Length: 254
Image (cartoon, rainbow, N blue to C red; front, side):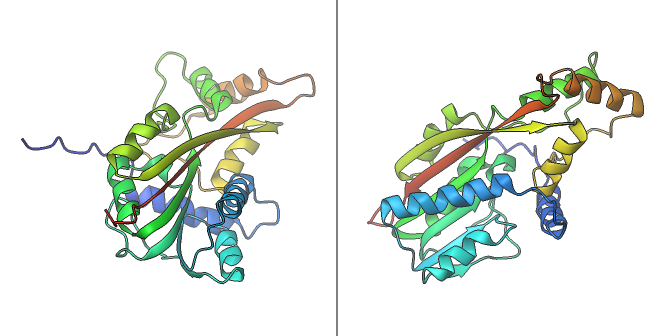
């Protein structure tokens, strides 16, 4: 029986461009990086807790370069390929640690990507992947509905529900899989500042068929809807759910 084709929800080109834009915007002194910073800090804390000291590591998606610097300071040889596609096989196995900062929120074939990550590990190697999950950005989603209440367009791509992650890891053959989540809450004075923060951090829309830009009346409704959700201090809270997947390749290398 021929397997069903993988639907193309995300654009490989748009996914790469949003990372390039984040690297470029990082040159600004006020560019946001709190999500990547949180993921990097979480990675280093978990490595210390597990007493895992990588000798050869692969880091993907870290547009800040912060994680590679930390790992190299600890003596690891770190690869950071400029061009890569998680939906294609990664460099042949041999890494004792792979870190993914973001990226998995916009993958068409997520089970396949998880298999590629496992195969790139040396036997007993560790992989740790962080990305934003399905409970993220409720205020922004509500504002987009306010903008187009009658016929809302797909302006935000679907995100992974962490409840589905354990099954995905098992299907991909990860050993000792663990799924954790935590939330970051950030307070915004305007919708425009939130959108700027998303662009700063490579979290823009990566849909293969994105909707046309909002017109002026719709954008005004979106801004008003976002402002209507402010607290007493005049700021609107927004939530980012961070999903962390951790697992290993078996010592037998399977």
